[in-house]
Image (cartoon, rainbow, N blue to C red; front, side):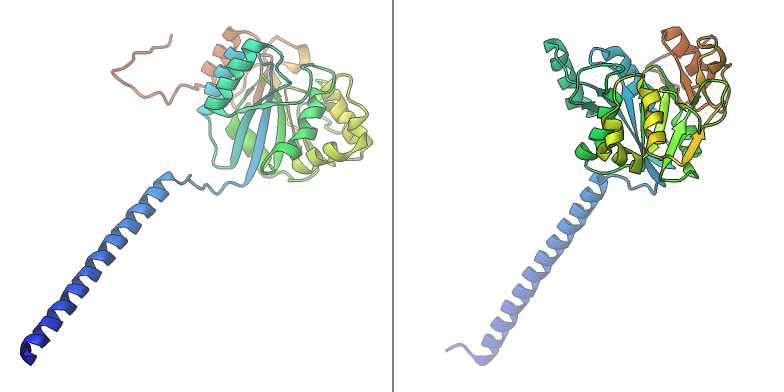
Length: 296
């Protein structure tokens, strides 16, 4: 039989071993948990306390690959702390086999395309399909939804600033037509880029007024829908900050100005270059031994 002293020592030794194993296990668990939390924090998206959300739907056609890639650059380098702004390209069903393949690659890479269930058109319901479809397909609502052309340059920071203090409901915002008019309650907003609050988007989806009136100049139709439905009591025409490129459209055009929100009718690359250089868009390009770029 083991002496009582040796038995006590053996018991203490066993207890010490158990404590040591527990300590090691606890330490490993704590380190693992800490590392996991660090990794999750690194992977988690940065939460920005934005004041509102805006979806910009740029109307284009499936075959306009070069224009979409260019606009991705133009909007990809812009940001604003005021709002979360998502830019999507909007077109109807794709019937061309080649375009199906290329657009599929775009979606896989950029995930910024919405394909509507319609036949590609200008004045036969694409705008109605766009607004009426969004509440059914989007995973979340936006405060505002914009319809814009693919020949317009939008400056997102001034755009967000101009929307910041406006109502979040019953809002119709843009560039009122006719060009000389300053009254947003007469006629309609130009298709260069107009904004509706989300409640109006939902109204378009469920109302028979737009559903039964979809053929004709679509931007003009939107104004008619809202008038017939007694909607959009909050209307804002942001002239002269939204306009057509100088010399392209009579009284809708004027010279480029520093506080511009939107420049429309940019049909030629030379016009785009003039606009981007006027606003010094590449000013944040950092010097590097990998490239040497100089401007006239």
